[in-house]
Amino acid sequence: MPASPIAFLVVVILASGAATAQPHPIASGLGVRHIEIPTESTEATPTPEVQISPRMSTTFEFDSAIDPAKVMLEGEKRFSLVDLGRSTLRLVPSEQILPGERLRLTVRFQDGSVPLGAAFVLVAHPARTERVIEVWRQPRTAESYQQEAKEARAETHQCQDENARLRAEQKGPGGIAGLLANGVIEDEEGVNAKRLLVNTEVRQHPGNALRTLRAWSYRAPTRVAIAVELENPNAEHPWTVEGALLVSRAGAPLKILRFWQKAPISRYPSGRVVEEADATPDAAQGPFTLKLWGPGGLRTITLSGVTFP
Image (cartoon, rainbow, N blue to C red; front, top):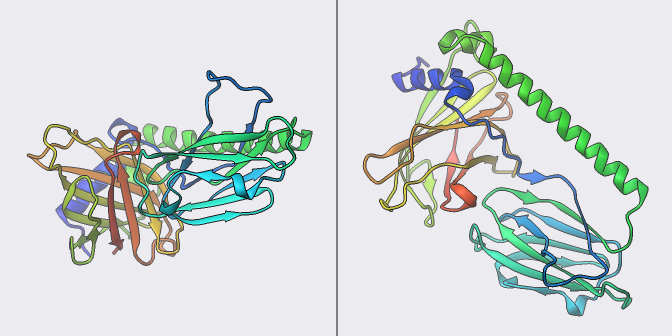
């Protein structure tokens, strides 16, 4: 398929690197988190906050048995799953959970030892989820600290690899030459473009903060991208993208490499947001759901039915 003028615009954007794009890789599931409950707490002791997200699982693993009769979950009806085990609690929020919403969770332990229980604040985010929360009431084992150190090293290596990729892109040429130099496109394969029909192929969710006017998708040998033109009905509060998530029907997320926005979006004129993801041809098959959100995870935009050429 020949590249359209819009495809050429995205080629330039994808090659522009960190000068215009925001490299914010977004993970749908964060790593294991360890929380130690103090033996004595005061009003000044902060309540741990845990990020949750619609349709994504968060599991609390306690080192002591919990009393099922004394587990209190605020807004329990807005969870599609509340699975209570002897020393575990698995939560899956439904789509009724709103970004930024804060719900309190309290548990009590069965043995009556101090501390008697634990409290948490569940903070709803459109995409970020803390998948496993290990709650320690007693001093942690050496194996637990070793596992945490291993996860920290793996995260450090991932950040180092990402920084090396960004530095390599910044040192290379711009424009189409930059795409060729970085292997984003190949000698005989460029960027294919597709116009997505809004409200026909691509569906807007009723609670979207902004209205989608037009959308396009793009595919290169190792990357995909989406450009959406948005109109902000709330002229007094311009909208700026803070994060993005692109997830398949099966729930598998693509790695977001960067997103780009020229300026905050007001009602007039409309504005465009471009998202780029790392994807092989096999990984970018079938419909995807695109989520965008503003500062603090608020004022979200969800588009389902996104496909690539």
